[in-house]
Length: 149
Ligand SMILES: [Zn+2]
Image (cartoon, rainbow, N blue to C red; front, side, top):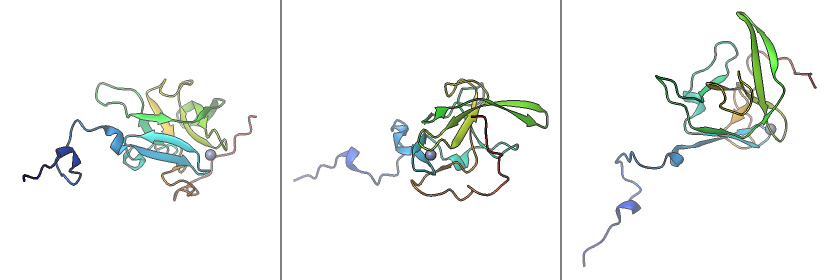
């Protein structure tokens, strides 16, 4: 009796499946309090970082040369802040963890997320492991606490 092997059941296949759902490659990141914050198609470690503050740069809109990264941010918008930078001022529209209010991300345009070309994830703010503090959470210079409220 011939043995019938379903192609779809072969999970050890090394064939590239260009039509396979990208859902398989999605990464999930959490706030250090354990709250789910970000789903993204790439590992944050592969993305470029800002020189100014070490924040991870996520392209949220297509450009002529680069495609936007597919992601979803679960964070609450908070008050914009104006920062002094070497070249002048920079306005940041910030997003914080819905549970513990820790700042996790910002962009240069008002909410919603993706209204500007980039979203920045604060250095050391997120971890892939729920309930685990990221390795770089405490290195680098500490940003002054925002006492605006
Ligand atoms: Zn949190």
